[in-house]
Image (tube, rainbow, N blue to C red):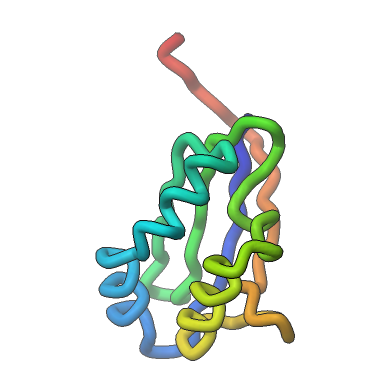
Length: 105
């Protein structure tokens, strides 16, 4: 299964976001993999500071469903100063509808 969603950075925070993701915590990536996230890409539109995320997942569990894990809560808190977030520090995210897909298989 593939899912996509968008998130929004606070103004002027693109560099900080990119730097933090170059050093994403190993505990976060391990949990993502254990939970069934097989692929995860995040793209940025620098004109709008909007992030577009894509995940290939197993079992219908993507990163946005892992908020009950302590390491994810800590990651969300760490990122909350540079992103638009909800009251629990989870990123404000909007699921995107797939309208086209091309596969080589």
